[in-house]
Length: 312
Figure (tube, rainbow, N blue to C red):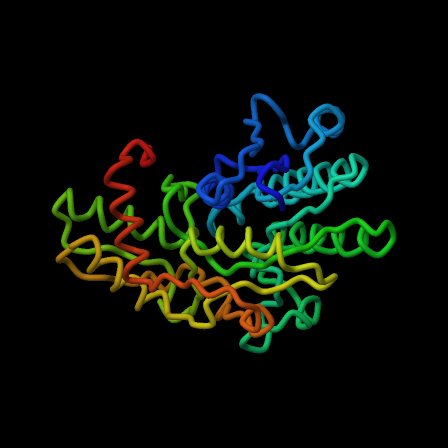
C-alpha cells in the first residue's frame, strides 16, 4: 500500500476495525475511508455495490461482522449466520467488481473443529464437526475465507484471509449481552469490586483453554500482512500460547483489584475445550510484536475506566 492509496476499513466502529484504523492513521496513510452503519448497511447488496462504484477504494480491510459471546451465539444463530454471510458476500463481491487491488478478510479461530488436534494448523479446517455453541458464526466465517480463496482462483482477485485468536483491548464490547470472555470478566470483576461483593461466578469448569491476543498487536499484523502476504491459503495470526479460563480469571481479578473469591457454575457450557492455533507460518515472517497478557489486561482496564459509557 502507498501512503496515498484509498483504504477502506469496513467495521471501523468495532474493536478490530477501530484498531486497524488507528494503526493506519498513525502509520501515515492519508486517505483512510470509513462508513457508519447509518451511511452504509453492509447487508444491503445494492447499497454496497453503489458505494464501491462511487468511492472505488484501492484496498479493503473487511473487519465488519456480527459478533457476540456464547449466550448471544446460542440464542440468535440465524441472525449470526445471515448477517455475517451478507456482509462478507456483499463486500468481497463488490470489491472484486470495483477492481480493488487487494482485500483482507478477518476470520476467526472458531472455524476449527471442536475436537481439532492442538495446536490447530491451517490444514485442520473442515476435518470435523464445529463447536455447537458458535456453529452459525463459524460456518459464516468459513464461507468468507473460502469465498476469498475461490475468487482468487477463478478471477485472480487478490483476497487474503487472516485468522486471529480471541482478541481483547480498547474498543471491546463490554455489554452484558454481547461481550466476549475478557471483556465480560473485566466488567464482572469491576462491578463486583464497586458493589463490594464477596465472589464472582464463572460459567463452566474453568478448564477450557483459550489463546488471547491484544487487538493493537493484531491490527499491526493486519497492516503488515496487507503489505507483505499474498498466499492463496489463509494464515493463522496468533501468540502461540494459551491459558485456562480460570487462570485468566485470576489475572483479571488481580488487574481489577477485586479481593473476593471466584466460584464456578459447572452447569454452564465451557464451549470448545481448547483453541490454540499453530501460527508457525506467520512466525516465519519478519513481524514480531506481542504484548504480554498482564500488560494487555492493564491497558484494557485503564481504557474501560476512561470510557465508562461502554458499560450500559
